[in-house]
Image (cartoon, rainbow, N blue to C red; front, side, top):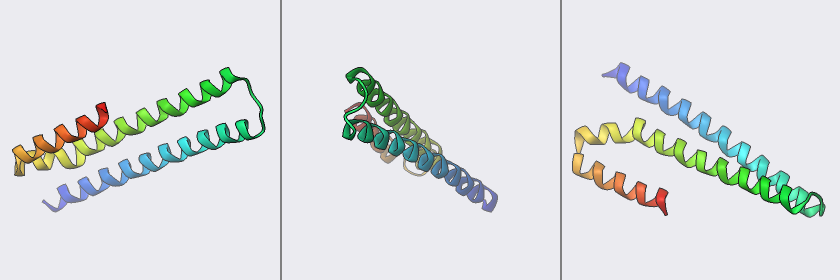
Length: 98
């Protein structure tokens, strides 16, 4: 049981580290776009391309967070409270799908 808890914590730490790295990457992309616009540089096409890159980064972040939820939360909830887990999963899917 203790080994399982340590493994879950280690998995959470790894997910948190990856999540923070993704956020920092997105922040850097946002800052670069802001600087480009503030300097009145780059073409409209380049600005849109950078904005789409940020959008894809956000989508990747959301998918990563969902994977983290499945691995770190949903599995435990399914054994303890299946109906509650299904309800939580439905809420998260609605958030993801807008």
